[in-house]
Image (cartoon, rainbow, N blue to C red):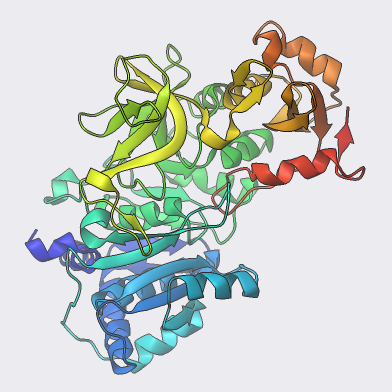
Length: 475
């Protein structure tokens, strides 16, 4: 593979030369796209954009729904082939929020849906020019905003193509002909899937919108499936897997949030021939990540440390001893950066997580913002949530701290339950598993936890369930 392939459009041209007629991206029941079609239409889009005044460095918003993955793929590479910067955004954003994000990244124009990209492709001519550069900005993604306002994160082509194969025999996921996912456009997980379609052996298969039954119907026809933990729980609880032949699934990958051990065990039981793999990264840190096959002997580990990619420090940035708890950092050789700011120092990104490294395995304690100071104790909500998932009636769970006049904060659990549940029963179940200061003092049962597009719980919204009488069953 030549040096030009160290850009995203270069990777597409490389795959087109190898597998022109192979399906690259398919939306089940909607549309499919071969590598030849993808490369040709991206070149046409780039030509049309140049005629509209788009130049290298121009920022272009891409607003697409889940049913438009093939059009999105074409627009994404077309924008980059013109040397411009792609800004993927989900098509179901409220107009006011969409306008704010487009303004935040100074988008000069917007391509919306299949009709928008189709119009560009029809008006453009095939042009061999590729204005992208490895050190040029390639995309802007917005963070999930779980703890505040979303922030724009810029990545170069060199960042996005880190680790891309140089030989067709070295493509990832070689055990599969198709990999399945249902991640919304605009998330870091979705962008990873788009890059997978260029750098991995199998074709990408997705559904227009995730439901457990839609996804389950496709599982017998794929070798790899990617989920976030909330999707995994819905899939397992839906009964949609019953009676399916899942022997062909060799890998189940989970990303976006830590996979609770009990959920990993359930996945291993449901997919007996598959490796259950946890991936730990962030929009800011990617493609740096920690990953590992779930190991029942180390159920709380989220990944293995590779040399120079993970470090744990105290609050001043000084390294801590092996096994000591501190701030988690990941490092990418081609770092990303927040809009308007310099690249992260030396490539190291603070993950806003507290954790420890022990024998090169990474263990998370909690998010910085989610640690609850109650009385004299600092409590990990992640540990309590993992224990709650073991309760047979609990479908989903999140723990927060609520103001308390004496303790400073009290622990409160918000759960989705498949059967009746109350606070005394929960505390009794958790008592043998947790210390007394880790037991929730309040509980509310709700129909669904609020989550963002990436599947992460919006914890800042959970306090309202304990204030409004109609918010749920507070016990």
